[in-house]
Length: 211
Image 1 (cartoon, rainbow, N blue to C red):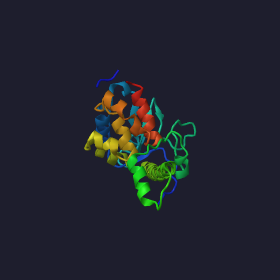
Image 2: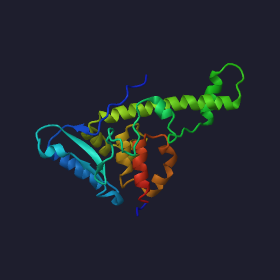
Image 3: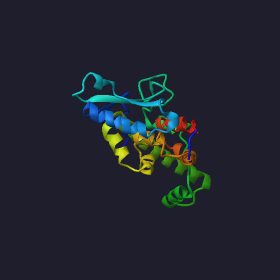
Image 4: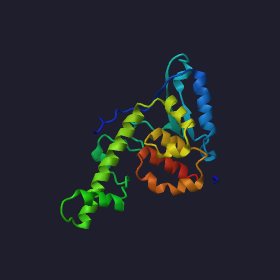
């Protein structure tokens, strides 16, 4: 119990490339794991098996949950959905796009002549869905090319709030499993998570289920 222009389809990647020596990775791993919320200690792990054999060369890293590499984009049995096109995102029922009055007014101002209210809502939702689809596909493409060392060090020098608000999937994940994010904040961000990539939603549910 806790206290308080569309990018090309993403290549199927399951690891993060990283630069540095074994000791730098060892210290970084220790720092990251020290921030894990207690309920996820031992369940969420950061691994870099390549360093055991090639300590003087760049290696790879992946995040495991219950010993499984959950960010493996080529794993057909994964519960995380990986997109190939913007259309897939637009048709994904788990991505829920809220429409505000400002969104509707922006459409109203851009149309000529009177337009029925229900039609304005449809247009506003379509536009916002397209924007979100581009953002999520771009974020997924960036994830597949991520240098874990770079992103992890950025996370350690960035505020939790900024990491949560970021479009970077890996920053979102590292923040969601962080013990500094308390129960109240986790519960209150449920609506925000509806607009996040399925990988982020997966870690959000993982964390929320520990509350």
